[in-house]
Image (cartoon, rainbow, N blue to C red; front, side, top):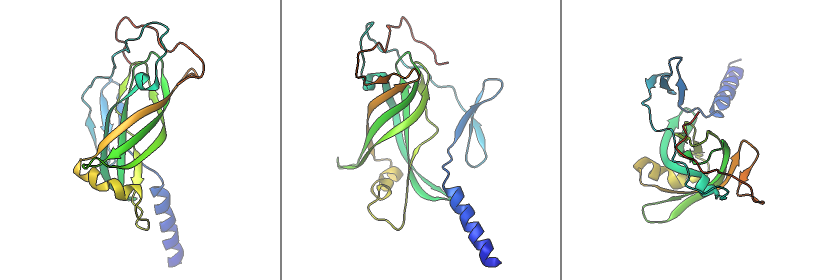
Length: 202
């Protein structure tokens, strides 16, 4: 009986470790934003800029993915949760277009203090960016430490994440809008109209 209980406990732990939780920002009924933390505490969130400057493009000009969406901030940190050690990579986006963005393909390269690229990858990131919205992400890409493997991504980047010495280079390769259009496009299509002023996020 004791052995069965041990196995059930192990399975429950594995199931829990399959989930990645992150801090979450929510809005109260009065409009105030609060940050819900993993440790069951919360704190008020100061209002920050949530709009991006409209892209200065003449009407009918076709733009590139890099012009449409910008990675305006990025960071790495070490996490040490019940599921084990990991490096968290945060990418924060700004939408410069007058369309809602629902997905981006982004490549990133992590460079150490000696100018050597130690790890790079390309990922498809599902996002929800309203027109001209500048957003700080509450989710992250997780690179876990597997003690049974050597030379894995975690082994290459954990020390830089701990010391804050990593240089993170990014490039937006593809942008997907909620009207089923994409950048880059295979056929010419209108992506932006010339704005007359800054538009606020919805």
